[in-house]
Image (cartoon, rainbow, N blue to C red; front, side, top):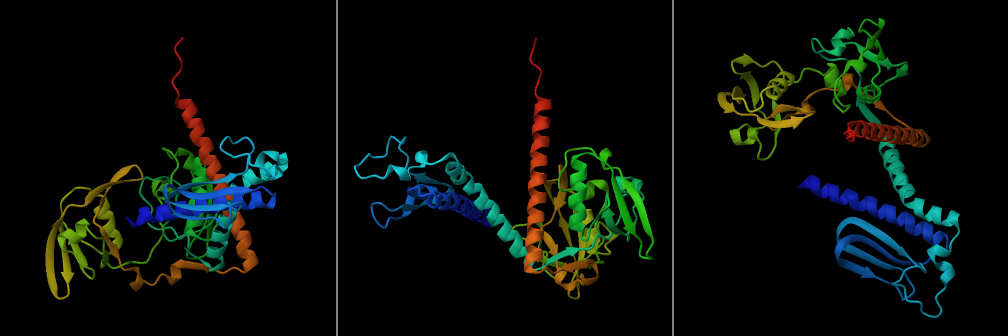
Length: 361
């Protein structure tokens, strides 16, 4: 429910900023705005300072909106004497009309820039791109990438965080090309390998690291539950925060990562879990919920680890920026996001065109 409300609020903000861009542009060109309306359904708020002023309207469902301008072509506009038709939208120059039309999307871009800038100005915290366990038989194993090594660059482009490495690999996967990976060992030795992403099957998605057989290196996290999701399998079974997982199906559990991996590999399969609560040793039988993720079925219990008890300092990178540096970084992020979106749209269009059946002769 929270996510639904967050979605509605986000759409409402985007729509409002978009329409306000149209409004400001229209006013800057001397165009009379008759109504500024946000939402659909029955209005819950109306305001108009006087008969010639803009009417402001807010309705119940904030998933759309519009700006109504004076236009001599509108049949519902009363041609009352004294109306200044030079303020009509259709009487403006082509340049003014284009400015008014494009001001909405430009307002959304400005909002994106301000949000990016505000977040980046506070500093960026990410995980260092240390390679964790490499899956046997994966593309990463073929490339001889090794656990514990640090990814320094991808295709000669330096990377500072695991998130940056993931983004670059995703872009390379989209064009189905191999990637030159430069790594540094804990001893300081530098190696270069080729990750054959051109051999990775399927459509590009955010699971590029996992599908390539890569995982970020994390500290050993004790298998102690930190939080329980409401109405989850974990809650229904009686598990509580602070419980330490000892065994699953008689197999000793060394850390949280091992426990998660075992649960994910057991969707809708019975698990006998032995755990410790205080001085007591307890047992429970669990049936992990089967969910779809990344095109495959995995198991989920609804239990989370308490990361506050884990020292991530050696694995983190914190970057601070001045106001001007944050602005440049925000523009770069916007450019990357727009370029990636256009590539994805182009790829989707290409796939759709190729998938159309041939007409019969």
